[in-house]
Image (cartoon, rainbow, N blue to C red; front, top):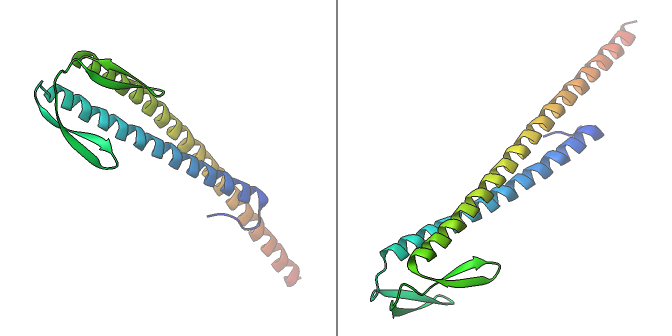
Length: 153
């Protein structure tokens, strides 16, 4: 993109690359949070559709599942975060999951704001780099004209 031996342009190019990497990391984190939110949506829909006596597939890990019968919807274990989980009834389980979604929405919003800030900073650096390139080109043109005038004399 830039370079040409100008140390200031090289530094701007490096800063732009770092900002681009930062933006990619933020966007990746946003995508992960959206995936988690989607998983929570599925859990809420499943809880709402379940009835006592329903047969479900329960994951055991490693890709293995077992069929099980739901005996009581008042015993839903919900992860709270930080490695903790709690047993909740159907209504409280859904409420807990919705609260997790709200927290995810806030985090996604914060990260989107960070992405906007990074994009804005990148745009400013790109504009500064273009100005430096134009100045460098003008100086080169002036030097070439000066050399040509010296040759003409």
